[in-house]
Image (cartoon, rainbow, N blue to C red):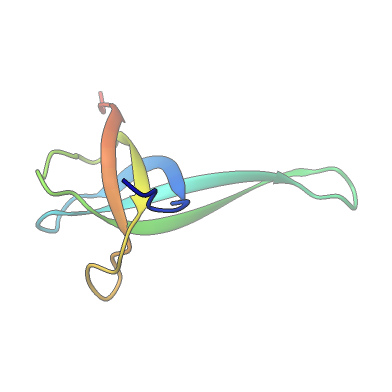
Length: 85
């Protein structure tokens, strides 16, 4: 069977689970400014498809890039890495 290509993967925290079969995942990225070496943080929110509706707010999840599922959904939840306390 042929490979499906390189799909991007991200690990982030669920910030909203109010929609049906959909979660909003916040992914934090750290990078260093080359000009003066300061470490910066930036966050980005991704809308991801959660088929079994098992993710809750605060869970740490892994998401993978997929075909467009709606106007804003282009990611899918692969697994829940850590449950919220």
